[in-house]
Image 1: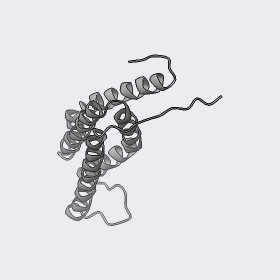
Image 2: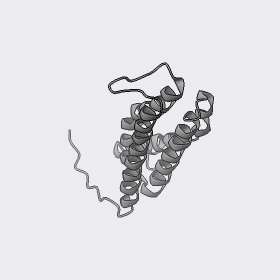
Image 3: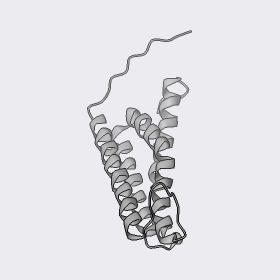
Length: 143
């Protein structure tokens, strides 16, 4: 049985949209880094990885971010519908964490990618907000 609900999108959701646009620029920046590394380390297209791990670190930072990007986008939207300002802040934390992750990886020392581990704090906050949003819609809780 369907229950009619009315949902009003908060004007604060604009913050969420801006953070998602910022994330697109972050993805572009990482892609440009891969292109520059291809030239620097002489890795032609369509080769994904080379024998030079310095290139592989740049490539992997971008690829790993792309692997998690759909999850980020989904959680950013869902959490933003519930609590847009906190969701936007969490999205910024995730994006900045991914930049630190990439910059650490670009050094050629894969362990330095862990400098961006704090990105998971942003992702976890968005996950919790999304769960609360779902529970509220289901009228299981009213947080």
